[in-house]
Length: 161
Image (cartoon, rainbow, N blue to C red; front, side, top):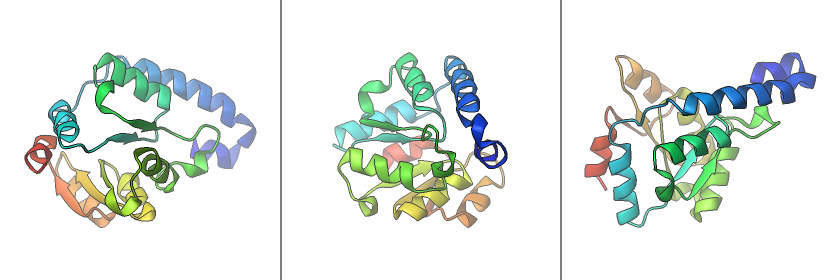
């Protein structure tokens, strides 16, 4: 999306539509990360609202949440800003929108993510970040990208609720 906006801005809408269709299709076969269901339940029990912040499209995220039966624990979805690829993470806009939707100040929020862009977006928005680093070398890379903490397991986060 970013490259399309740079190279052929007149094609952003066409690329967006095609990408969204592919993302929704992929969401139908995506698997839940181990520990996520338990983490969301623990957040709900603790009264901590959860938003999804993603560079994927909101329809793809909502499709996955519905098929995985996770929607009841999600307060808001902040997907890729349609028609504005320059506002995708690491731009802070999607994180700031999620904070507003949750009714929390950015400094009170924590973003859990698995990419450099996630860590940078959290830092750019003024939120703390936890890197989900599954795989060798990923923890170091995400720490260098600005992660405040690192975990190799979402289940570990349930214990820290």
